[in-house]
Image 1: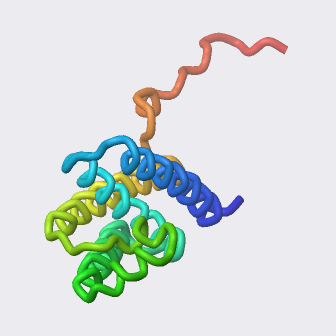
Image 2: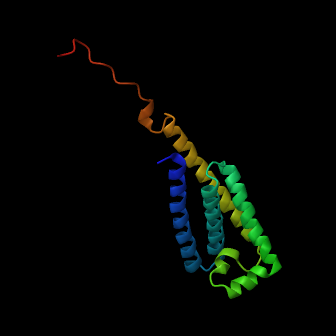
Image 3: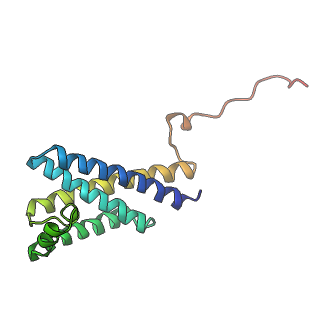
Length: 153
């Protein structure tokens, strides 16, 4: 399986896990910290989805685009349209929200930055392993010496 196909498959699996984590946080923690964590996970999910769509884009670009999308959704809440859609369409509130809150922008920035940093680390590690770079402590060990003496036949 080519690298980009493996990357997309892994990103999709992690995206599903992120959705499960986000819904769990949303349902379990009814506090400001829970809301912040949920918003950060929402941004991480958007990072993953952007990376699926554009797998060759750098982690910094993916994180910035994801934050811009999250910020646009948050600012869209100022229009009142998202509140109306959230009230009339089941599940729309999980995607669009309903009320603008500036701390959400901070949570999105944190979530997007952390997800982009993890993505950069994963990419760096993958690039090292496929290019013969050092990935384990023993990879820098000297090669074994041949045995002394006459080879047996």
